[in-house]
Structures are given as C-alpha cells and as structure tokens.
Length: 198
Image 1: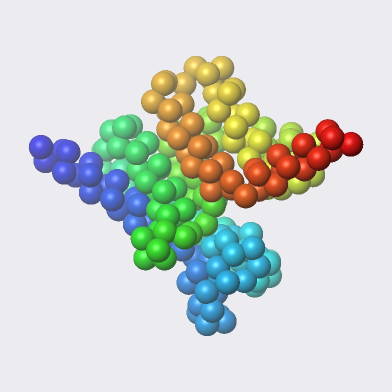
Image 2: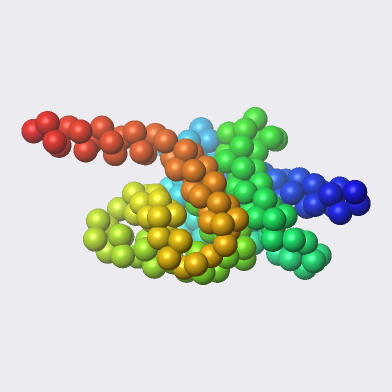
C-alpha cells in the first residue's frame, strides 16, 4: 500500500515537472506577454526562438530537457520500479502538453520527451536521434524530420530487443507528440494530396 502511494506521488510529481513551462515563464518575465499569443502560438522552445532569439530557444530547450530528465531520474534515485519510471516519463510529457495551470494549452512535447526518454531508455533515444539525423539530411525539414523519426523509431524498436513495457512507453509518448503536432500532420497530408493531384 505504501509503495503504491509513493509510486502515485512520483507520477503526479512528474506531471507537475512537465507542466512547468519555461517558454511561458521566460516570455512573461522578459516581455510581459503570453508566448501563446505570438508566433506559432506554441509554448515551446521553437516558438521561444522565434520570439526571443537563439538565447531564448536554448534556455527553453535546456529547461524542457532537464525537467523531463529529472522526472525520471528522481524515480531511479529513489529506487522506484521501471513501471513507475515509464509512467513518470509519460506523465512529464502529458504535463508539458496539457499543463493544468495554463488551462491545458502547453507545448508539443519534443524536448521534454527526449529528456525523459534518454533516462528511461537511452537505447531507444539514441536510435531516435540517429533516425532523425538520417531523415533530416534527406528532407531538411526540422519538424517533419522529428515526427517521422518518432514514428519510424517506434517501428524499429523491436529490433533492439527491448522489453514490451519499454516499447509501450515509447509508443505512448510518440502518440502524444504526434497528436500535439496534429496541425503539422494535417498540413503535410494536405500538401501530399495536392501534389499527387497535379
């Protein structure tokens, strides 16, 4: 019973870490406005870069990576199980995409998911980065390369002979990230259809 309570607390804490939005806080502190009202309207590192330059991008990127890593590291340091670590990784991504204090309108989850996954399963994360680089060198589009890399890695993960739970966590995180990018996915699909009609 005590273990279940502690596990629940770690997962809730991971969600809270994820919901701490660096892009929102930095933009509020520097310019006094909500970052979701500027640029792409996304509360993440890429839009922070558009609104505050490279320094803003890097600060938010490091912040988002760190909170994802910390969400899983705390479970590991406390001797928590792999199941709790995996659920905490998912909770951190959920917190970033759907932060309760920002009325569930946060970022798109790329950086925080990378931070959480590199601690939870470095093998899966290194494969993801390798696939991303290969795709990016070919199509030269950052967002599209990232989404394709997440999906492609989910297909390739069984070849690493990872356990079913690790693969399941990765797949859930991928679904969350792709769903958060639904407008990009829809735009890419419409572009593809238009090209094929010509």
